[in-house]
Image 1 (cartoon, protein in one colour):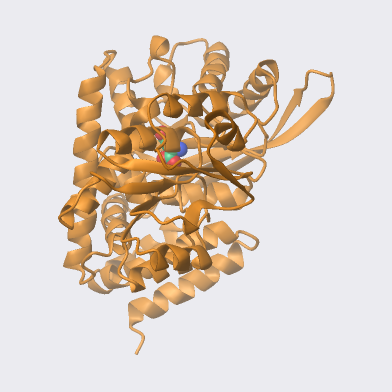
Image 2 (cartoon, protein in one colour; image 1 turned 30 degrees about the vertical axis):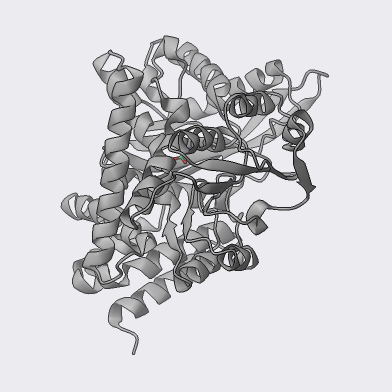
Length: 451
Ligand code: GLU
């Protein structure tokens, strides 16, 4: 028999789908989160009465704007810009900007919704937001990227600020783009407010260890998962997907912790390196990214390893799987191959890299799953630490930041795992992370009245 809470969540999900038509990624994340909250809502009927759950699935504010710019050939280009300010109950909106041709409102809303819970899990005072553009950085010159960033910021600046909304990077937005965006913000505002963006260069308020943070955080989180089952990365083979910033940081730390990374992937296929992606081969990922060619085959050509065009690495027999590319990288058919290969640990590095059905398949087959909201929270955590350093006008050492990051990740693991156990779902970190992230935001919303 469906409980009152269950019926409420089902009905709310139905309304979300109806009111936000054509937003499949957003529906997907709302479904996953609502599915995890039934027991909590059962215990806290006030979350229904005060409309907390209903409010949490509705962004506080969403902006869509025109971004006109001129390419090197003198042609006018028009892209679309987005910023979704999802939830400010526990701090200023915080979340990255994604530049990728696939970007649309659904993708930005799914990311902003996830970010709300992820940021809550970090224990730092950050609300949830996300933005970006359908601008495609592939093949663009440096000057084109700069002109695009300047035009984008000329509109975005009016919605953001160090105490209101603090964007950062995501796919297609790294140190170079943040630099151009910050330069334009500073020029428009006429004051040096470097807490408005994170992921900045070190010379103007960036934090040491920010580039490494997401991948290091994933590795620390996954290490806790392994440790809780009496094992470690030592001697384990690891399949990664992607070859961008998250994959890079994860490859460094997993290797340092004794694991061997054997796969990488790109839009063109995947590579298999039986000797491990390590040492200077990891540095080469930075070159591949900077080239804007978006081809992982370059790695295979350079190091003479096998390249599998048009395929994903999920059929390779390994011990640990960490998808670091983008959303919906692992579908049920991939999950079946992963389970058939005897994999016991899947840790989500990218945002929502597994479909809901794939996650359900893993859980039903005894795979220990680290959900992205928890596992990849290291990036935004160090962004939070960058904000603290900017406010204090000081800079911590790499070791200080890394130690704080590690503490945060262990804390997230502990909280997610305890919440799962408390609500009768031991070892289900997906439910645990959703519950732990939700309760903090819900309590803050409760205290702040109907806003
Ligand atoms: N884009 C990253 C994420 O998905 C980082 C966001 C940030 O640093 O604000 O969490």
